[in-house]
Image (cartoon, rainbow, N blue to C red; front, top):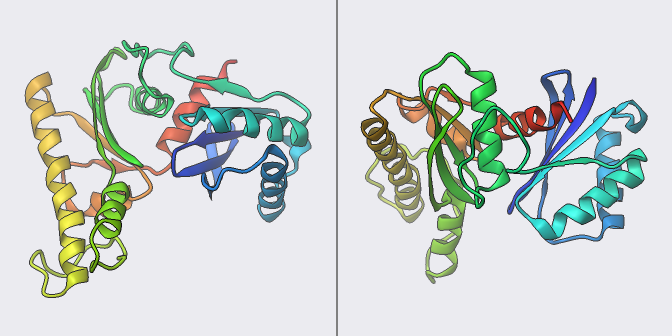
Length: 253
C-alpha cells in the first residue's frame, strides 16, 4: 500500500511517501507564511510532480499536526488532490503506547509510538526531537510513557540570540574546529553545538538515573545529524522517526 504521511510542525511541514512500512521519499516545506488551501494544493501538486508521485496511486493519507490552524487547510488541499479525506491522528489515537497526558503533543506521541514499534525488544528508550522545541520523551518496554522534557529548541534559541543582540551575525549550525572560538562565528557555533550537546548528555544521565536503566537513545528532528557524531550517548539518528510514528498510528485506521 502506498501512503502519504504529513507531519505539520511549527517550523516545517514534512512529507513522506511510504511503500508499505518503508519511507521511500521525504521532503519539507516551510510552515510559514501561512497559505490558503488553494495555495497549499498548488504547492503540494508541484512537489508531487517533482517526485513523480501519482495521486491516484496513493491509497491513504495520514496527517499529524501541532498547528491546529493549518490542519484544516492542509486536509482540504489533500482532499482536492486525492478525492478522499485524510486520516488525522493525534494523542487520542489508540496504539500500544499509554500517553498518560491529555496535553501531550501529537509529535511527542508519534515519537513514542515509533520507538515502541521500531525497537520493541530494546530496554527503556529516550527520544530526543531537535525541533522548534527540544523534547526528550521516555518510554519503557511495555509502552508506558515515563515522562517528557521540553526545552527551547536549538534554532529557536539561536534566532533569539541573533535577533536580540545587535552585533551578532547569522551563522550555520555546524561543529566548530575548536571548543574555544577566536571569532564571533566560531564562538557562537561552540555555544550552540557544545552547549546543547552538554544539555542532551546531562538529560540522558539524569533520566537513566531516575528510571534505573541505560536507555536506548534515538535522535530525530532537523538538526539531529549535527549532534549524533559528537556523542556516544545518542545511539541512532533518524530524521524520519516522527513520520514513522504517524504512519503506525494511521496504519490500521
